[in-house]
Image (cartoon, helix red, strand yellow):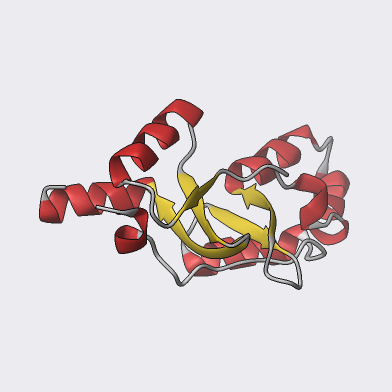
Length: 133
């Protein structure tokens, strides 16, 4: 089975100039833990995860710092600039091995340098539980 058969194509994205408050709202609304950061040309520039936000919040020294973090900090300032990418024709087994080796929860799927989907650990578990992949 290939990544293209299992990936989700309804990927919620966020621009690099969005605020952390906007990112938190997007994460909560979509019930996800990571957002690909995509430029105006549809190219993925990074990934912002709930862990990135929680780490930044933990470093804030007080309520005022936390408020500034959410209101004044952009996604580009906190994102991880090297998202883990995979191609459409990668075998699911290889994708699972990459997630394990890289210790990531999701791989973004690209085609011709453009974001076309996402494959998460949850997708792999769902496939295993329902189809016996």
